[in-house]
Image (cartoon, rainbow, N blue to C red; front, side, top):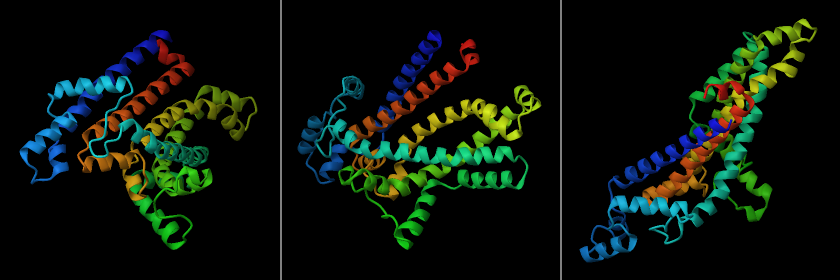
Length: 315
């Protein structure tokens, strides 16, 4: 297990290093100069040069890259060009929206997917299975922003059960905050629930065909008892892996949903920073999101290896 962990940790470090290089230089070569954007097209050359010096943009890109990476390693993510505020403070404020939203959506997707996948697997080839698989296919095919707009139209505009957008803040109370995040969480959860239900069904069907399941039924257990006592437990390993990967996606991939619902989260911060050419914010937030995705994948791999000795034996 130690050897496997070291190898996975080395892979994590290499992935982070490559990601940092790609993120920095892709963003840096994008057209548009932050200083020119801030001062406008009629700015004097002397003023433009002074602002570039103040922002540190006159330093060679390689030197700026190492300064950026070194700062992140010490917890200094730099200062926003636009707001003149430490990036780490901006991220901390927005994370209190994006993280609860991702956890809420993950809980909803799991609550929807597990019963749907189990129901479909227990009725393989029947009308119930076909209906669930058809619904999941629709959930996979339709983008989450379309679900978001439909939810706003039905529950915010017509029924007026929820606000169409915005976030009241956690200082208004836990339930007020969760109420504001409900529609965005549902919009994020529906496509992920469709994927997870299909994985659950496939994994459970594979387990139901194993010898130990036939033995359990031969000993007198009913189909339902064998499924719940033995089948479900063994089918959860790949499902739990997908859940871990989905959390990473929900945390890093909610940019469009936060735009639709006007939520002050990390996704909206990235979008606003791109529009303002606030490069240091874009680079730092994207790197943090990449770090979260890679770290969660690393933890999922370790958890998978802990419960599946075959994976460790192949390393």
